[in-house]
Amino acid sequence: MPSRPMDHERLDGIVARAQKQRVERDQGYREQALRLFPWVCGRCQRSFERSNLSELTVHHRDHDHNNNPPDGSNWELLCLYCHDNEHSRGLDGAASGPSGEAAPERATHKGLAGLGKLLGDDDS
Image (cartoon, rainbow, N blue to C red; front, side):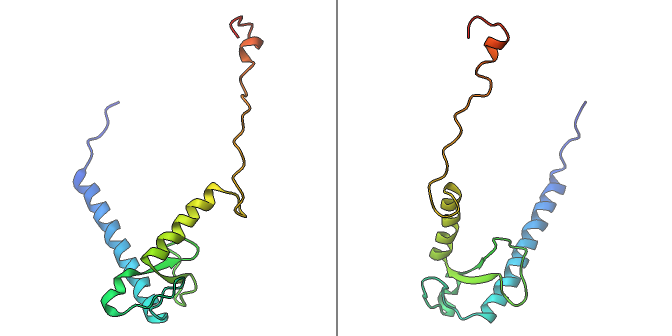
């Protein structure tokens, strides 16, 4: 069955609209957060001024960038370094258990190990 040729102009338009909407959404909650909160990193307490404000980011506590309540309850301002650290902690946490203990070992059971014997295959 022949496939339809890809409409690159349509695809480019979809991507451009999605990027524009993301930038608009980001600017909206960023501007709100900067009006609501003092310009201080919530972790390292570094203070920011207009000249270095681009280094202060908005972190979503629940990691859902679409959850932007007007009271800012899902946001905290973090410097670039603390924000990166926060997200790398999440990745580190995924490799360990909920309380920080090492992740359980992977299963070593081989479910089909005896299949050849069951089927009468002499090679197994």
